[in-house]
Image (cartoon, rainbow, N blue to C red; front, side, top):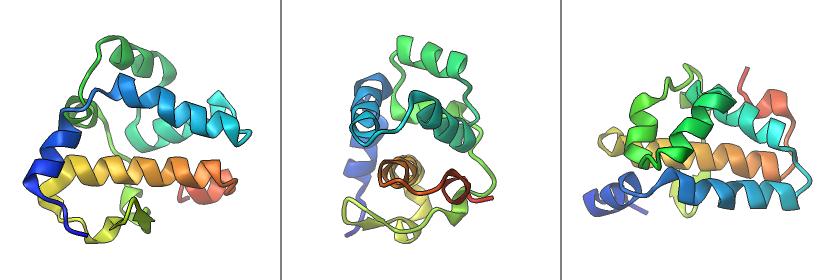
Length: 122
């Protein structure tokens, strides 16, 4: 599937705080802890729990969320298919969409019980 400018803009304008509980609910149902969830987000974005909570309270968009993030240098190693999109084939011009799919891939791996060392691409 190909990403379009419209899709990228739609995701960019979504409020992170509205999606965060959906991520957490999925992980909780699969027996993962909030500590693990936040560890994955911090590895990917550089946001510790305090910063993450501030961004949630501010109701930032995904665009702002990723603009403020310090994406991990190994993020390029996150590959695979999420929601029908192969991450490594998403054009770099759709940066927000690509980062969002990368984060979703990490959450998918955590939900499926993958070991933390593998998720964090050490």
